[in-house]
Length: 510
Image (spheres, helix red, strand yellow):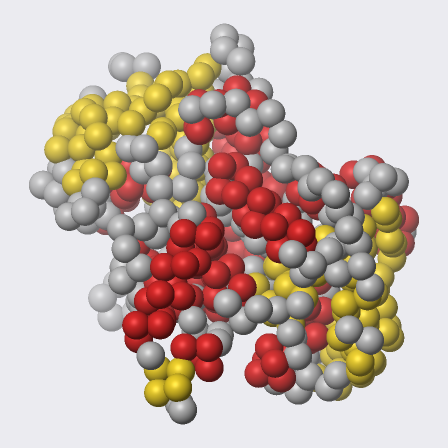
């Protein structure tokens, strides 16, 4: 039996405007965890789509050799029959169906006349036990957190008798404890003989969990690093990914000039829109000054997004109370339109669902939040729209063929730049960035950080919500800590450490 469970030989994938994969070679050892890393648009997901049959045989050149056999998958079901199962970054679960129903959706247990529900729940419980999820199998997906949903996806994959599990950014939406639990589960499943391929931008997690790390850059396989033999430090992996060393991942700001208070929020309270009486933001007060980056840290569910959206024109929550001042003047922002007109912008954490219209052009998305800026008496000036979109494409260095491309064709990092362009075009005084670098690579992150620094250098104010503590510490002038809807800590840049922030959260929880 071959040491490798998988070999992808000389893979070439051509699209009309670009060659996404160019003579890629990739081998995965049986019973290992193999990480696939690279910048956004490097070709990682395209390679996995070739492997899983999403790009069917005949649409690419080269061979996929799985368990010693050349495979010619026409669709995903073909690869699943062989035990190759892929879990995408955007989880494919139905919120209003139960855990058991989701696990066997499309693969129902029973006969052509009826589903055997007893057997379905029995089998679901068996696989949930393997992944360590104790929730009842009849629990609706909408009633469990993202971390548990990820476990349901893995249990679903195991129920398909997976031999090779592919996970695309499995921890991008998880907090640190859930991420660690997931990585430990993969290590446990490896002991049981499961082979995994993990795509991730979180290089500390890659170094922790992976036996081998293959770097892809611009559609080419650059190198494979082996744990115990090669240097697999974050800096070394980054060098392979971007082709150079990045000495400082957080660009320094020089001649920082902090001005007057731009946004001040006092005694802010927000209640859950569905569960009556549940307070999600509890008497929160904070302020941000001109030229300042203020970080907001906290565990998942701490109320960070709820706070941001409720301030942005009551986009979230009910029975909202408290005072909000912009540039010293109290404002009543009852809609996003009010917020935009008052000089406030909110860059959502969910760019694909709430931030951008993926099926529309880059130019359309860029101007969507400020149509008045490209209109004359209510009529859109399309030449001006193109001019504005091109200006921001150059300013933010967005990589695309042209601004008439649909946003869906862009990599995650470049989609994020279009989303930033959309809100920068509103010319806000205060910009709230909710997880601005989620799911994007280290090179694209650096470019986003440079944009943030440029904004505050121009006298703008930035509030940055992030689950990544190194990012919060590296970019913020001041840091607020939220926990269970309450503001539980505030630190100046010089005093803040990961230990102090976590201690602040845990001491309150205790």
